[in-house]
Image (cartoon, rainbow, N blue to C red; front, top):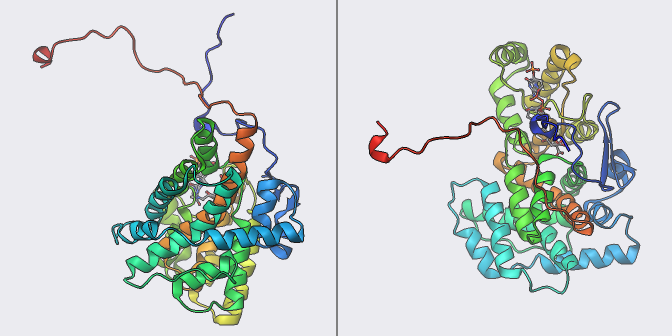
Length: 377
Ligand code: SDX
């Protein structure tokens, strides 16, 4: 059989690497579905816990299933004190995403093999993620750890643990919708990472510790933090176009724009834009929202025909900043949500697993001659 020389596809763009029923994107029409449900419907009517169950188990939970899942999450938010001490001992000037990666590895050291089933490990990982993010944040601010409140859901508990104040209903709702929006997104880089590590039969704690590393990158989940930095650099509406011209002249990327799959506006950014507008209307506007609107207009004018439009990261940072969340905690919030998607894909990968081992196009040389050290000039 003559082996055809493999053709390189940079970034595996458009190359299917698995079959999945978890989520679906139509990049031309700007459609995102979780298990067949349109993201706009889930954002309007669901909540993070229900959406996590839907992604993991394929159908909306019954009232009993949802109540049982919520109770399990509440129990698993009580983390081992030694783990909290580990998080508190991490370098205060380290990035919260690195702290979360260390947290997943340490959680696995405490818990792998200790729980009754993998469903328990999944619930623990979803419950523990916001607690670990908040615990590190409190420690690096020199503030005491705030224990989770079993009466609060994931979004409200995170705000409670982050600030030590009862969160208001609007902010809890806005964050809950943001968690619904970020929970899964077909074969993105961090989910692909999760599936590759899962395919080696590594445990789910290791899968999450790997996927969070992928999400940290500025071209992926790390973009939301950089969107805020870039909007603050632009400063005012009247500086938008000059800034954009400079950025494009140096072939710089405009963070929060563009997508490998969407060639129209990301449906999630419509929802986040509405949330931002609601927040600003109710709690007072800041120039940054106007700068963002003007930047979106300018970028679409210049790059729209290349299919470059706002993605999920463009408006999420504005929402989180308005809620007083530190900029470098934006991406960990992405992780608080996406851990549900990674674990849904882990479950799927384990059904009919085959270890990922792609090919390469060899561009090196053969028959190299070994010379002794002394003879190497
Ligand atoms: C997320 O995959 C997912 O689903 C991810 C995600 C999820 O939910 O998991 O949706 C979350 O990661 C959203 C993306 C967040 N990242 C950013 O906002 C960073 C800025 N965006 C770009 O880096 C870029 O758009 C990517 C990485 C998102 C997509 O890159 P591609 O598909 O590899 O496209 P490319 O880099 O090859 O760009 C194609 C062309 C290039 O121009 P030419 O060389 O053809 O002239 O488009 C240009 C690029 O320069 N381009 C941009 C741009 N994005 C693409 N130019 C300026 N600003 C941008 N943002």
